Structure formats: C-alpha cells, structure tokens
Amino acid sequence: MKAEQSITFTDVWAGYGQEVVLAGVSLNIQQGEFVVIIGPNGSGKSTLLKTILGLIPLTQGELVVAGYTGPNLPRARNKIGYLPQMTLVDPKFPVTAIEVVLMGSYSRLGLLARPGDKERTEAERCLAAVGLADHRNSLFGILSGGQRQRVLLARALMGSPIILLLDEPTTALDVAAQHDLVQLIANLNRRLELTVVMVTHDVNQVISFADKIGYLNRKLYAFGPPDQVLTSELLSQVYGSEVVVVDHAGEKRVVVGDHHA
Image (cartoon, rainbow, N blue to C red):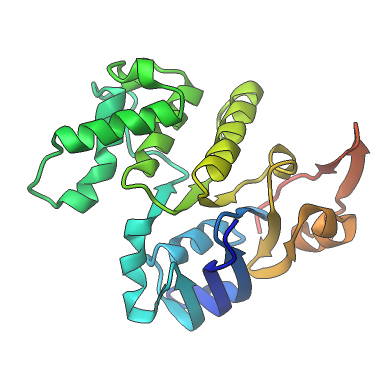
C-alpha cells in the first residue's frame, strides 16, 4: 500500500443552495484504502461522493483529490470510476453488456467520437475483471440484478481509474448477490490497488473488508479502523437512536434501524 494521500477533506462545507449538507468534514483517505461511509438517509453520503467528483462546489474548506484542488478539481474525474446509486441504463432497453461498459468511454472520447477497437478491447478486459467475460453479448435486461451491477461496475472501471466511488452498490440485491458483489469489490481493491470509497446502509456487509469506516450525519462523527470506531456509543450518536454492537462468530455485527434525517 502506498503512503501518499489520495483524497483529503479539510473543514469542508458543501450543500445545495442555502441547505448545508456537509458541515466541517475533515478526513484523509490513503491511496489503496477501502473506505466505507455510513449514516442515515439524508446524512450527506451521496453528497460526499459528488464533492469528490467536483459536481458540488465547496462553500468553505479544501478538498484535494489525486493531487488536484480548487478550480483544477474537475480534472481529477479522469482518475475516478463512479457507480451511482441509481443506474441510468433502462433494463428494458435492447443493449448488450459490452455496449453498457463502452458507455464508460464516452466522456473521454468526446461527444462526436465513437468507441473503436481499443475501447472494445478495454471493455472486454473490464468485463473479465468482474467475472462476466462470457456475457459480453448478453442483453443487459435479461441479466440478474447482481450481474447488472457487475456490468455497471465494469463500466466504472473503464479508463483504469485509481479511485472507485460506489454509492449504495448492493441496493435491491438479494443477500447472496450482495455478499458476492462486496467480495468482488474487495478483490479489485487489493488486486488493482484501487482507492475505494463505498457508501452503504449496511456496515455488516463490509466490516471484514474495510480499512476505515466513517460515520457521517452532515458532520463526521468518527473515522478510523473498524475495531476502533465500531462502538454502540458512536453509532447511537450518528443514528439518533440506540444501536447495538455484538460479537458474532468472532466478528462484530451492528444492529441498527435506518431512519430519515
């Protein structure tokens, strides 16, 4: 693992219009770390990812992503793969898996250019990386929910990013598919030395993989290794209700109900 910092928030404030969503957030994410951000609905988790992408301007503070900051921050996007919470690919639209992955090259190619052999070879490599090489010509709509998320993950890998941002990637998947997807993400994190920032409601999915966990509810309540921050006291502050941390088969498990902030 390299020691250089990949993402640094320093007293970051951001939001939408007059609404403050991130209030004085400071954290350091090292290159190659698997970082998980949890918190209730409306707590600013998705906004945190969008500030990293340069889509939401800061009202105060400093954000450095892959060496870029200030007005140069949008230039970091070419180093970032992003899997948003809601897919923009209609499963009923007659498009194949590899065509969906090729969409990840559009921003680099420009509006009028079309993917060529180079991009198709890269798309096949990305599909192989998520275990779907044999489904390159399968219609996206007939794939299972877990397979569709893998295709979208492959799309995020186009361009060989060094940072991977994942917004609730396991939503609407069954338990087995959730486990498989998180295991895949962890494998990609290690094998490709990707810096992974994953937003989730269910911290139990990722406890065994995460290097650090952040508790966000507009402000950052805690940020550190799981064995240091997984406490009932801290989690109860974030969720505003009682949260129980228990030991199960030698591992910590969190019992918490989500609510709207």
